[in-house]
Amino acid sequence: MATTTLYEAVGGASTFRKLVDAFYDRVAQDELLRPLFPPTFDEVKERQYWFLTQLFGGPRLYTERRGHPMLRARHLPFPITVRHAEHWLRCMVQALEETGIPPAARAAMLERLRGIALHMVNTPGEEEEA
Image (cartoon, rainbow, N blue to C red; front, side, top):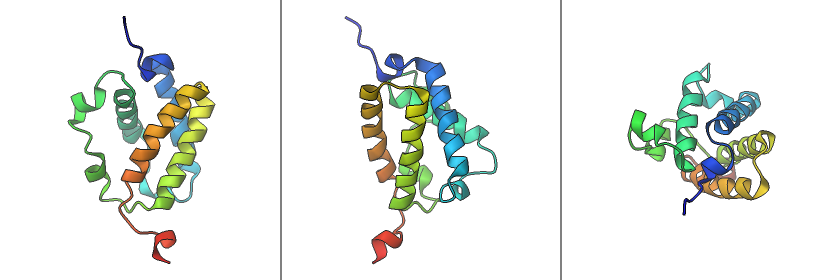
């Protein structure tokens, strides 16, 4: 009996391409997040596509191209606060909805992404300093 991954269940490569595009459309408009990214999103979009594909059970694109994700280490050069993580998650929630991912799959994906986003926090923000 074959097991269906989230990657397959939501439509595979084409859905994940749409998700990444929708996500970065929102990041581009977010005044808090935009400064953390390079002037163009081409490379980060591709890496995000590889990562999300692999994370949700698709081909191991990220590992094949860049090795172990080591997300926290790769994000240490960027000051990431809880507020940044919340903005990132808001952009992702909206992108998941826009992409048409069914509610149950969306909830499962968001649960996993929430933990990852909070793990990237490496800088106390105003909300932590008081």
